[in-house]
Image (cartoon, rainbow, N blue to C red; front, side, top):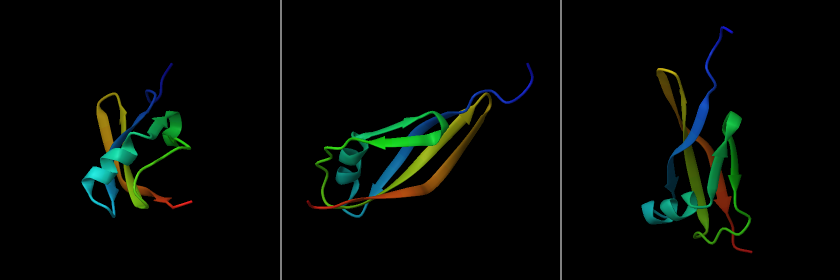
Length: 77
């Protein structure tokens, strides 16, 4: 069968309005699966603020980075 190999999506980077330590904490609660779908755990205890996500897309012999593709807001309940 001819065509593009399956694409693999992964978390490349998280940036935060609260600094890198907060971004690293938020990243622990994220999962990226097929098609670039992102899931965030319902019980995030990262600091209140904005978290901007970049994804890495790979297939056989090719890689692309989608910089700052999505922003999550963590609010105080």
